Length: 93
Image (cartoon, rainbow, N blue to C red; front, side, top):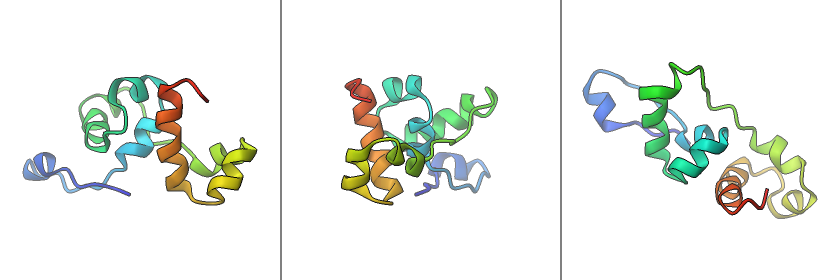
């Protein structure tokens, strides 16, 4: 799910960006930002884009890598994203 960032929209940027998918794509961002979608989108705008980062996390591929996640989430990509961030914070996956 994308979010429109009001501060950036006020500056003339009308964009929707999935900050959680972006955070889930990078272990360092999971640690630094947790599950804060707005912070993820803000990081991308201020730093990530210039660093060549993208929202590349594939929730379905991640789910398919673990039998327990397949059983729990099926093809629910958003559930996988919401599982990935806390799991990485606890180093469970």
